[in-house]
Length: 407
Ligand code: C5P
Image (cartoon, rainbow, N blue to C red; front, side, top):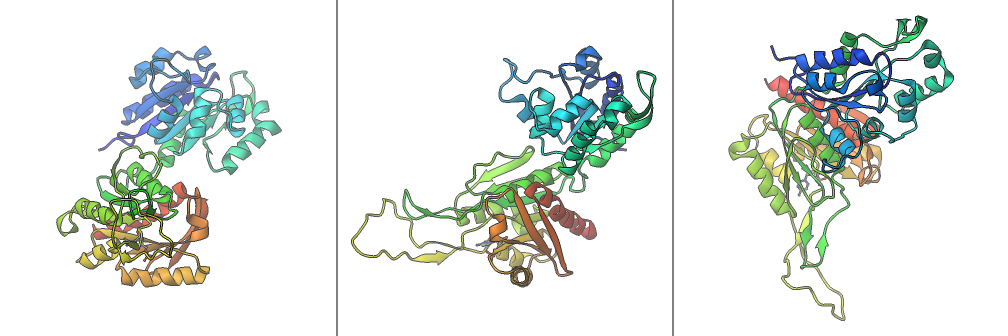
């Protein structure tokens, strides 16, 4: 049987509490179940446990300093990007306070601030500290922000011999919480092709037609699909976004280039992909002619002739004989909610796709958050407002469900 954490990349942050010795058992359980564990220490963690223990269990050096002369790039950014889960065992009152106020004053806090993956914390402290309004306020902030899930603390005896709520959960309970927080692997080995960003249609060497798409939605979908085990090909128009971990990226410029890249990724008879998510804002028109030299200014009006671009999604929809690949389209409109949904419904048939993610132009472009409706032949599901990274999962839930139904 595949181990529960097979190949999952987990950052295990240890802070300075007597309960830190139990973090070594957590590390051991995770490694035994196939996880790649990177241990991080706060500065006081090593007062309680030895780095050599964690290095021995995980097979990797423990990291404590934010800046190291031998490391390229920024450690906290690299760890946050690589990790599928940040597990904080134990989480002291001080660390919770620092996280709640958004501090980035050591490697653990900075990594937590940078993470888009789930964060699970196992608090451990004296019951008086746990029940203190300050700690409760900090915990309320962290949980309320939706960025940290807690496991424990539980009622029991603490290091001082006192009893109450503050004792850290047992390693098995922490590992179970870690498993529950990780994304499902329901797209394992599926090939998901995602398009993102704007297309750019050149008029001459310095001028072009484009749109305001930032690419954030498509990149979020690509990142989450990879986290759920898919082999992801991300075909992107020009954006400033970094490539998500584990994603194969193909950069394109024009709609014609995007279509060629999509065709290559889907393969002959569309047989090379399980799903196509067209999140790109493909330009509907391009200049009839791309001038080799910069167009000169003249005295009168300038007329531009535009010709239609191919509709990439509709072309794939028309070519699809059966149900593969699953097709996800997007619709951005600036009308009322009811009209946006009505347009999306019409697109289900005109483009022959399985779902249309409808959103309002005003809510969507360039922003980190979005509000969308998932429009299928069975109905409409409203999602958000929420960060685009959180909207990616319900969209992928639909894809995973469709693929499961198809066997
Ligand atoms: O028709 P409309 O542009 O609203 O459709 C949007 C959907 O169709 C998006 O999923 C977009 O990526 C896709 N599309 C396309 N080729 C075009 C225009 C849009 O694939 N030329």
